[in-house]
Length: 153
Image: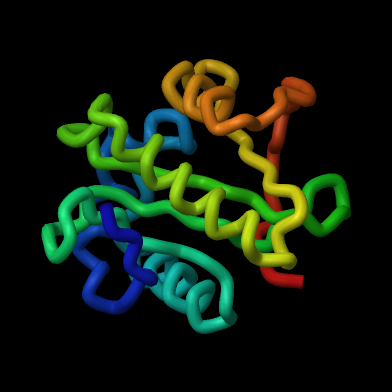
């Protein structure tokens, strides 16, 4: 598996992920197609700022099938590092997100910026909750997150 920093060439992946109803079912539904350039630029800017956002390639030099990243965010006014991932439906259930998250967490453990990493899967998103448990995340609480500020601090 290979994690490649998100680049302009990953626009088709952004479109495929963000516009897919199944992929976005736990994330508020498919994006507005007019919003894709902004979302794509945000991911590229995340990488340019030195934060991590990657395209997931199950096979080196193969096509990307998902995305994963750690970015600076805020919850209840406090700065945090949040992790998130998406895998195209036809590639789900193959352990791709699990392996990508393992690689990302291993890298984060070696980087002092990332002391604690938070994940916010929906309570009804059983696969992502299972992935979090398997990766060693601790369930703290179920809470309604109406708006998560993903701007850098």
